[in-house]
Amino acid sequence: MKKILITGGAGFIGSHVVRLFVNKYPDYHIYNLDKLTYAGNLLNLTDVESKPNYTFIKGDIVDGDLMLKLFKEHQFDGVIHLAAESHVDRSIENPMEFVMTNVVGTVNLLNAAKAIWKDQWEGKRFYHVSTDEVYGALGHEGFFTEETAYDPHSPYSASKAGSDHFVRAYHDTYGLPTIISNCSNNYGPNQFPEKLIPLFLNNIRNNKPLPVYGKGENVRDWLYVIDHAAAIDVIFHKGPDGETYNIGGHNEWKNIDLIKVMIKVMDKKLGREPGSSEKLITYVTDRAGHDLRYAIDSSKLQNELGWKPSLQFEEGIEKTIDWYFNNEEWLDSTTSGDYQKYYDQMYGHR
Ligand code: NAD
Ligand code: DAU
Image (cartoon, rainbow, N blue to C red; front, side):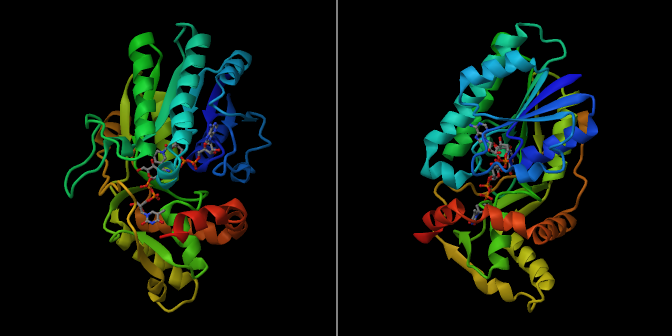
């Protein structure tokens, strides 16, 4: 039986990857290692928690001794590393947490894999899940490819770029069998409501202002989270060592246009007059260092490994909104307590 360590499996994307691997590969044992920060939520995994091929471990990747101990004890064959501090606005407020988890935590995992695998690389794999934000910002034209030079602008993207560099360095220096993917913006069920889509969905639901940064003209390339999980599956199993793959949906939206689509769908579902929630749109001070546009060229992944997105955006956003409406308890539980403090700090002064 293969033993696979998935880090950050209680978070948004990680929980979808854990679910996919536990259900699709009964001959793998999946170890989900997560610190359970504000973003980690075991409610995301109630449907897999009692499966015989699943184990949850609460732990912090910044603790290097613990990483070594876990690798010794469980002899993992593969790692899919998603644990990270992931929100750009939080990185602007507190960069050091991003350095610790995203850079130091990643190097701790690399060191543990290197120490335990001891050059016996056969059948081993260290998969690092990264972001398109490492490439910086595009103008109105063009796409990020795997050859685009790194040019991160936020403490978050700088920390992810740092972690990518360490992963490549461990491949080139020590021969560690690593692979990296850089994905565009994800949306879908279980995303913490600090990110644009679930935050605005929750605010529309509660008739609260929608804080649009700047003029709302920044562009993001949105991918349904289940398509990202499927790409991770394909890359983990079929991608050659040392490679990098970009993952994206070819689905670019200006923030303000995306928000209007959400309002249109939600007003209908909430029985409100069409477009009436547009009155909630409130333009606020722009995010510092706000990247204008991200857009991914995923042709390498499509041509070499045969992955492509399964959902059109119209269907994906409808499914996403339905999920949050059907899981109001999840939404209410994640937006109580500390969340309110965060919200007031982040948006109170704008
Ligand atoms: P998330 O914030 O929803 O989840 C992160 C998870 O990591 C949480 O469960 C948290 O508890 C855990 N974690 C944080 N610090 C930890 C630590 N020190 N030790 C152990 N666990 C820790 O993030 P997400 O949006 O699911 O992103 C997952 C990964 O995918 C990240 O590496 C992120 O950079 C990358 N990514 C995200 C997106 C996106 O649009 N969300 C796009 C591309 C890449
Ligand atoms: O591109 C991949 C990245 O996408 C991931 O690596 C990050 O982990 C993930 O958080 C996401 O980063 P963004 O900064 O693009 O996502 P966010 O949802 O925070 O913002 C999306 C856009 O919406 C961005 O242009 C900022 C804008 N925005 C966001 C918030 C939270 C607003 O206008 N108002 C808001 O309140």
